[in-house]
Length: 450
Image 1 (cartoon, rainbow, N blue to C red):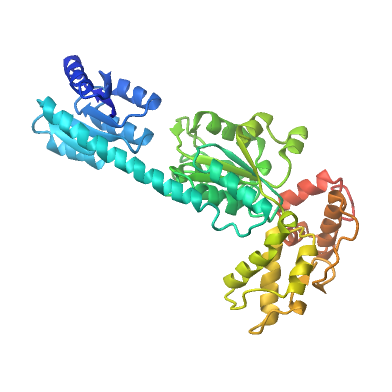
Image 2: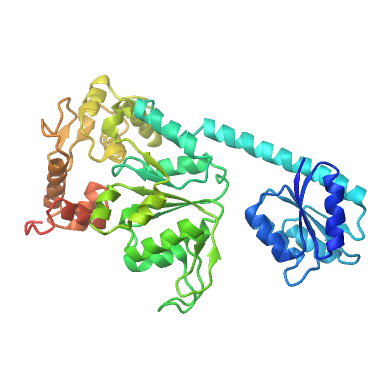
């Protein structure tokens, strides 16, 4: 049986409809004003809403819009007086499924409720089946069968159907955005937009207006109202990459969104509700940023509802052959695999740039090989330093200290770029702001040689 809300400012009609529908086994709530109805739909999930059209100050149209905003699957039947067909049609355009004229026949109402209760049930079953299929196919763009990859795919399948905020953690180049897309594609929001923004790639002065939008006249150049990315992602997912690079002022507003699901455009005192799932990502430990007082601890715990760690390529070397084949296919090569010697050498490499570095390597080999087959000599590793063909020994020797090797890579990139930090960051596959953060973290920011 269905859960139903009856809305009418005629108390007697609400009582009669409630009694008639409860006698059919339905669970029925009554509301005597449009505002009461809007308050109830925020707290309860209804299968069907029957609402009068003429109520003051909140009328039936406002109820239709409010119900659909809160619960798109709820079926709405509008009760109208004779001669209000035009208004009823507008309600149907706003999301109502049917209208009935007053005075109502209780038998007809019961039959109509039974019909649309079944329609809603079939719609939900269909959506559940589609979601189940999406979860079964979760991570279809995540290539590989290594244990670490399968574990990540399993975790994506568990969190995707929920509305939980996800914090994706992993080194640069591991595929955090692909992971976020996999979560979105296996969620109930998959038909909505997936909007991605790199918090480190946008100037601090612009990030707030990009995310939250702005009102005309809010600042110089704001010559018209503009919605931000939170509003653009309505009904879908907003992916905040490199969240640790967001300035503190933006962090404060992000915290409010996570707590209240409301935003204010820059320069606008009015609040706007947002219907969006947030997935954030970081390539550095946010705990360190908290200790350095550059990241809010309360925001960290709001984001940490479901942490998801993306493994480095070093931890999933069994996937290298499949990933290489995938990239060769992307570049249009008929060649399906690299030689066993080449794969052995690739598995022995440390992969500081992770999957992004592997893709660059395959693209470079594709160019060097031309129309011919990619051979061992075409697969060049460690191009940030001295170029060499793929080899089986670990290019880092016996030193596996992460900080030491980070210093070595940054120093090599800066030397190769002639001290230009923007070029060095590009070589390293990170943003200029992230490079500055790494330099400071490693105590290299005051080095006159840098």
